[in-house]
Length: 262
Image 1 (cartoon, rainbow, N blue to C red):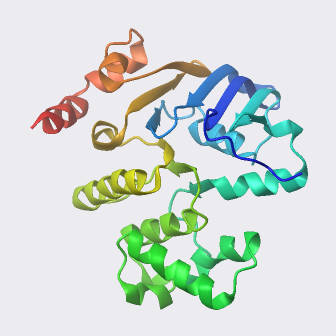
Image 2 (image 1 turned 90 degrees about the vertical axis):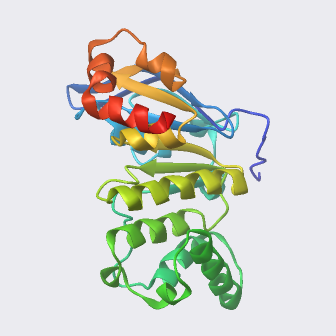
């Protein structure tokens, strides 16, 4: 049975998630959901399992307990064919872009098109070139290999690939890490523009305070093995937890907040 995407249902929700490696419990009784059309920033200290959580939500790691729903469907109850179809609604930008080194930028973007569609190759190339334009890469980058690209260009190429199938949900893992301030700000603006143009729902893992202040509608805080709060930035900043107060009360956070108000 084909998967019918209910756009009135929550794009993604997780309930009672338990993840662990051996006896090491990473997440316990974790509840989380993505509001439609919003950009949610996920923050937490090193070792709290932000990337593990993303991989769990994506199905790259199965949780030891709990339930994950997409568009109202329990992922565990979907057939292999339906899960394959669900994957077309989810785009992912991994850290560093995760491009295939032996493929050109255009060929990298065509990978999901080849896997999930029966489109003619000529049309795939045209769609790939359109995504290259959407993420702000020059047309000549289509024939370049990842080794020819700067760090910022690799991230944009990875983003273009994540958007190849026009997904409903976009996962971004540290998208501005390693970029200079100008490049990071340009990437933030790109995400905001794509959210509006494509009606995306976005989960954004980041340590970049400027990105939180610039792009995020809500911020989720991962501490003590669960999501402690998901709310607007002012309410998160006021949340009484030692890590939250240290993270958002430091000089870098105050500087980012001041810059956001100017």
